[in-house]
Image 1 (cartoon, rainbow, N blue to C red):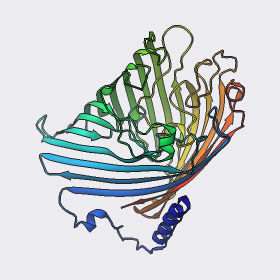
Image 2 (tube, rainbow, N blue to C red):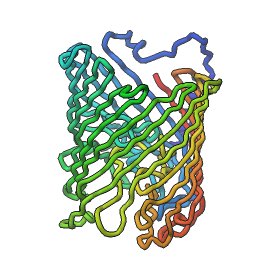
Image 3 (cartoon, rainbow, N blue to C red):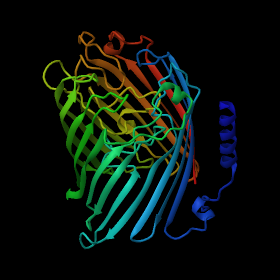
Length: 459
């Protein structure tokens, strides 16, 4: 079955890639097929990806992991003036996995309506030149840098929420978002159901509540922009699902200047996290106060020459839990990891928890059809006794030290048919440092090597 699926997708891609396209020809779209009805936006995409990981870094899994994933996405929104309605169906499936694979809810969520909302448009009721709206139902959220709240682009499944969202845009392009939601907890979450690509409606309810606000003010000082936010997460047990009873509050601030040719750009984002969690998932486990934080700092320069090369140095910190005192491991909430930490999928060792990591990145854009980057990071644990980032490797004694290793990654994307068919390929190598070699539960397989390639058709 997998071979037929891959072969069929490959034949479709080859047929489209071979199709001649004039320089000024616009790609065919679903909206055109429907006669471009006024107020209606419709889009669809299909992505086929193959990824391979050699020398697994996660404890207890097979040394080698290969996966074929498909993501089919259909979205529509109708804007009728004072009222709008929208929906999106995503079918995320994975093949060629087995019980020794890391495949999980990040790869599989079959036939899930991740968005289905009804909204009201208030026009300029909240200020001259402004626009405001209120949505209720299922929707996705992209807030600021997306480090703590965002829609996943690389991962095969995405974060989504059920609740209410108010958005206001000022005449000076300021933005305010307020929301109260039940995050969609992806199902199935058992290995058998995931391997079978079982269709099961995601769970949402008052056992997991996420609410807060985000404000953006452009050009507060010259070209410097400001983000301010406050997020709250309230978690409790439900039958057959024990949790750490997370009650977290996360205020944060971000100052940034966007890249531009011949200009320096910069970004500084800091978030503090407080509240309490249970010391384990056991019923009646004692509570522990939380005190954690994260920092991202970046300085870049885009050269005003062909290929638009941009060179940036960056540093990220997310605290880990140390013995005694408050619980110190930072919780990244609903933030995608791809942009800062490298590919996820069956890879993804780095993430915004218990890590201290400087890095450098070079981005190029030779043409409107091609872009690429290469990046390097070194990584240390913030706490030697906590599990490292997203690897699951841990030495409670702290005897394995703090140096985790080096990561090198690269990616290239090319529009085979502009705005219709895009090819992407990339990979990463994690060179193990002392910690990943000596941690008591380390696999001992060696340096992790990962690669992927995919094709995305968008209409």
